[in-house]
Image (cartoon, rainbow, N blue to C red; front, top):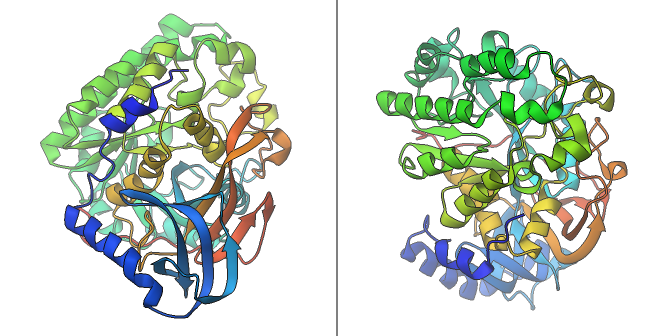
Length: 481
């Protein structure tokens, strides 16, 4: 693991880059004045260390009707419920912008209810779910079906990606504005059937229709197919996974994507970057492309993970060697990375035990994302403020989310409350995912989510789910281009 010194990280990041000085002055003024706004609240979060935009300070938060009403000294106010947060850090509700909850079509691995339960237990308040279900989420009917399913047991807030393909490209300009759509998703590699858009013509067809951000799985399908013949061959060695799905195939796809994005003047969001070369390239193209990294790629590295975990470490794009991991941490420190996510992609242990490469790629992660990253905060690899930037401000900015992503008056009362000093061992037994396992089983971490609040209601506390199920469909700004 690379240990980026905290002082270097603080100097290399400008945490308030997305807020004007006037907004910050107004926010601080609001903190000073809100104690006089009213005498009674639905809930008060008392005495926690609160991570505000551009300011981390010990203060109180008053909540009314599911919204943040006051930030400041509320010692004279009453509340129906007061949560003592002394010694804890209060974060905006953390957002996981890449999960696969498998419903419909692969319910034996996961369903929306179990995936959202795992998210809530892990301190995640909002999820964006991917379109590679069965049927694929590529039509208004499929989107409506997913929204209806999610609304039955909404443990967390939710939105869904609409799959972009050559087949539905002509309709995307209209369909991208459907309720509950967080963006368009393209698979340049690692998918099958109608959801695979491997060629420049297929990718271009999607990019030329619509304005919403397009999130892309960038691996070069043609290069990987050739590598499978010449490199993998008849081998069953999982350590070849990052060789077959090579760094060169990722760089090729990412370069092609950025070229096409400029040609069509369309913002793209490049998912789960794994290579040093891609980060160097994307750092020079931030005007058109935003960047995501995953906790697994920041925490595990080859060849060690394949030797200890076997196919449990198998995912696409692959976990790579240490020098690539070091480059990901450098990109977090210098501001190249915009979003951190889990890419929660569960399979059963029986499926993962198949002989490689028949074993499916993907690992669970939505419940362990926050503990694993808080441990990195504890070890000095990034600050807590930078973690909030990657899991709140970044998602809000790139996807134009309404009312979420920061603690400010008028915003939704979604909070992730964490204990930075709590030591805990991650275990399979804790996992609420239907898959029932984690690649981090047995890992001791320092830092743990202790309370998850959504819409001003406690949904998880001290290792137990609470009621009610308070999640809602996420809303997005009208002007999304």
